[in-house]
Image 1: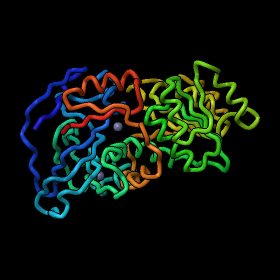
Image 2: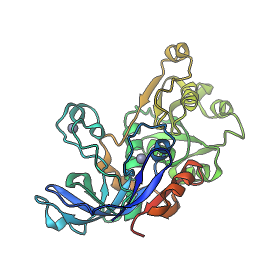
Image 3: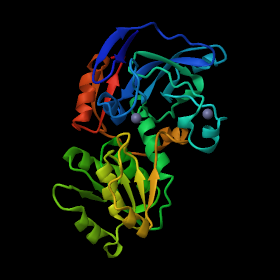
Image 4: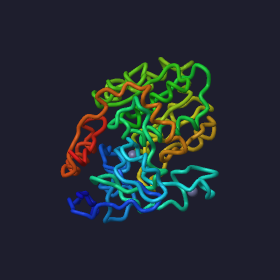
Length: 335
Ligand SMILES: [Zn+2]
Ligand SMILES: [Zn+2]
């Protein structure tokens, strides 16, 4: 089969590699769609630690074409969304924290920028009938956002702010709305992304190049004290700081975007302490992945996938994603 191997930086090769075998407990999936993630962009820019050579891609859906010993042959033909890492449900991390950080899961599982992939049968989740296979590839990013939003305490008639309307900001917006935020502002400089926030439930769209956020805070929030909840969905420390500074006393800020490793937080810690701000980190799919395919069927995801590329065009797709030319780009490894 064909697979794209990452060799560090922005260097990829298209390789012929052996077809994966279904070992005991595993299934082989023919990949339909793999989403380009901001993390992939960060990896190629050296901002997210990864060791080459490696097949990347962790947001994938497809159809089971073979099963290993111990897996029911009835699963052949099943449409599935894939977890990039399996989890044991038994280690300290699985039991106390977040199954996506499982201590014993095999982190060396190949990624989904390939025609086929073998994975633990428990990591291939059957789709609900009313979810199409391409949309299902959005499960992983949506899981990160749902997991993060569920870590917040959202008060009655809450006001909220999301900075960034890439796919993570959009899903965060949708889940903040479905979890009780009454008035939601989405701030985003890129017009196509900002406009798309409407279909994810944003009440007010803010263009930071147009008017300062402070004017929106003065207009929208109770006595101009700031939002009940704010979420940064870009991955820039200065925007996390903007969120914290836009949060009301005793409000909460959620970090959805992945900031570069080692980055400090440029805020006045005295102010954060004084105003009793709660800062919440959210990394990975949390413990909600299995609930998300059904959540996706409730959202209007029209035109969210801005571009589809064959496997060979992965570098171009990553570049398009890095340039923010759309919302979500997808690789179709078997097209
Ligand atoms: Zn991702
Ligand atoms: Zn575990």
